[in-house]
Length: 366
Image 1 (cartoon, helix red, strand yellow):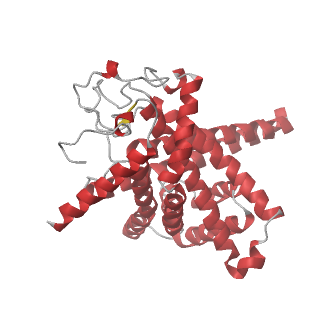
Image 2 (tube, rainbow, N blue to C red):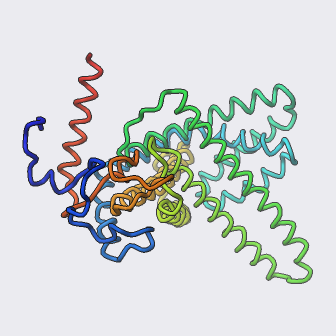
C-alpha cells in the first residue's frame, strides 16, 4: 500500500502499531482490553485469545519452529550436561549430580533416557579428573556448545512475538550465554534441592515411615514444576528482541508450557512403551528418533506457551512491559503495541509479513 492510498476496511480491523498520540478511546475495545493482569480478563477474552492461538500455530509454522529448536537442543544436550556436571563438581561430589539427574529419566521414554544416561556417564567419567586450567577450558567449550539450543530458541521467539532481530552478533551471543547459564543454574538448583530432600527422607524415614517417601516425592515434583515454570518464563522474558514483559504477564504461558511438558512427556513415554514400535521402523536409530521426538514435543510445549503469552499481551491495551507506563506505540514490543478492534485479520498479518520481506530485500540490494 502506497503512502497516499486509503486503508482498506480489512486493514482498519487490526492496528499493529498505533502512533503515540492515538486516541484509544475511539477503538472498539476487545474484552479484557483494560485488564490489569491476565487473571482479571473475562472469559470472553480468553476465548478470543485461544482462538488466535489456534490460528497463530499455523501462521507461525509452529511445527517447523519446534523442530528447529529440537535439532539445536539435540546438538547441545551433551555440552549442556557436561557444563552442569563440571559446574557442580567445583563445589560437590561429581557423582552426586549423576545419581540426581538420572531421576529426570522418569520423564523420558526408555530409549531417550538411555541416550541421556549414556552421555551423562561419559561426561562424569571424563570430568572426574579435570582440574585447574583444563577444567576452565573444558567448561568454557561446554557452555559454548550448549548455547546452540539458546540461539535456536531466540530465533523462534522472535518469530512468535513478531520481532525483527536488531541485536548484533555479540549481543545475541551474550543473550544466549545468559540464558544458557540460567538453565545450568536452574538445573543445579534442582540437583541441590533433590539432595536436600533425599537427606530429609533418610532422616525422617524412621519417624514417618512410608509417609516420608510420599512426602519427599510430592515436594520434589512440586519444586521441579516451579523451577521449570521459572525457567520457561525467563526464556520468554529475555529471549525475544523487545522490551521485556512483566513477570505477571508471562505466568500463564509459562505454567501452561510446564504442564504440557509434563503431560506430553508421560504420555509420549506410554505411547512408545505400549503402542508404537519405533525399533521395527527405525532399527538401530530408534533411540535417536525417540529422543528427537521427545525434544520436539518439549520445544512445542514451550513455544505454544509463548504464543499464549503473546496473544494475551495483544488482548490488552494496558502496558505489559517493564518500567514506567508507556502509551501505545512507545512500548518497544510489537505485541504490547498492538491493539485489537473488531477482531483479528490473518490476511493483514500475512500482508505485513510480505511487506517486511520486501523491505528487507530492497535494503539488502542497496
